[in-house]
Image (cartoon, rainbow, N blue to C red; front, side):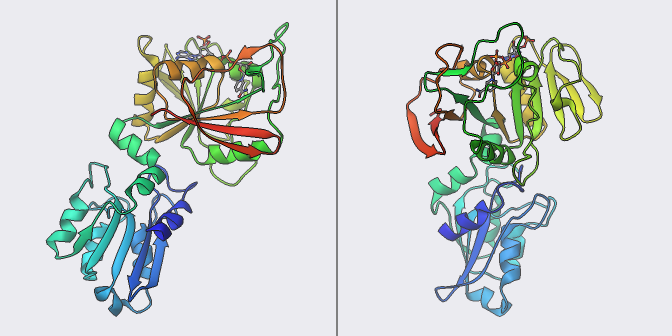
Amino acid sequence: MKRCLELAQKGINHVAPNPMVGSVIVYNNKIIGEGFHQKFGESHAEVNAIKSVKDKSLLSKSTLYVNLEPCAHTGKTPPCCELISSYNIPKVFIGSIDLNSKVDGKGIAHLKQHGTDVKSGILKKESDWLNRRFFTYHQKKRPYVILKWAETKDGFIDKNRKNGEKGVNWISHPNTKIVSHNWRAQEASILVGRKTVEIDNPSLTTREVEGENPVRIVLDPNLSLSNKYHIFNDEAKTLIFNYNKNENQNTNEFIKISKNNPINDILSKLYQFELNSVIIEGGASTIQHFIDESAWDEARVIEGNIKFQEGIISPKLNRKKHSSLELNTDTIKTYYND
Ligand SMILES: NC(=O)c1ccc[n+]([C@@H]2O[C@H](COP(=O)([O-])OP(=O)(O)OC[C@H]3O[C@@H](n4cnc5c(N)ncnc54)[C@H](OP(=O)(O)O)[C@@H]3O)[C@@H](O)[C@H]2O)c1
């Protein structure tokens, strides 16, 4: 199962909104086949693992390991549980149950009906963790929410701006940008507040690394942004959440949200768009709204090796730090909302 998880991880930037899945086939204590789900819409891990076994006659004497329950429905590919039973694989070991309502135990039921010996919950904690975006999406009907910001050693996310001064005041080491672009590539969407667009004019793309750009989102309730900013270019799709209108303009889509409970509404709209994760990159007031509503799962705070003495104060998490990682001259601190 550990090998399944290693294989599954290889799909990280390419399979969303599908889960990351790896599969291993063992005969006589030897791995005779393995595979993983490589790209959204392409074959599942079990299909690739079975395909990789040279002598298919061994399958009826082998054990298949997979970190997620085999699917039971015809989606972009046929059901994996049927493929497994068509080869009479006698034993299947599973990590997590698939909480997608189309599967949710049906894959296991099918295998058992066909006489397969099935055990689930193997390395369950690790399997659930790997696909936390997928499970949050199906269980909570909202994307997995990651908060991300950079702060100075004395707790500021920006200097005070005089006379409408624009442009980024960098806090982190230039090389940390690669890490943060990798984080972007791992998420389905990226969100910022209106003032961050006006002041920093970010592109919100993954240009420093390989991987797809996430869908860009800006909270511009009163539609005060003009279209001159980078996030409105056609490098990626952009959703503009606002109080006024629903409208499609090429890669930009305006989406009306409620004034009463905007955070909740934003998250349900992202669910409807099948975006299973969002990384929120500022500014402080946007992030603080999500914290105040407890609408977050993970926070990644980059502490740079610099002090501003005064400025915009960082968001307040009120959670104990889970871990710290020293990187370049920065420290990456991780928090969880549990
Ligand atoms: N260090 C970092 O990691 C980092 C990252 C990003 C930005 N920044 C800095 O942060 C500063 C901007 O931060 P900020 O806190 O002033 O502004 P911001 O969070 O970028 O934008 C705030 C605006 O977004 C809209 N908004 C946010 N949450 C909303 C909600 N729940 N419902 C409706 N609208 C919502 C509102 O627009 P309206 O005002 O139009 O209603 C609000 O005024 C800049 O100086 C930027 O350089 C730093």
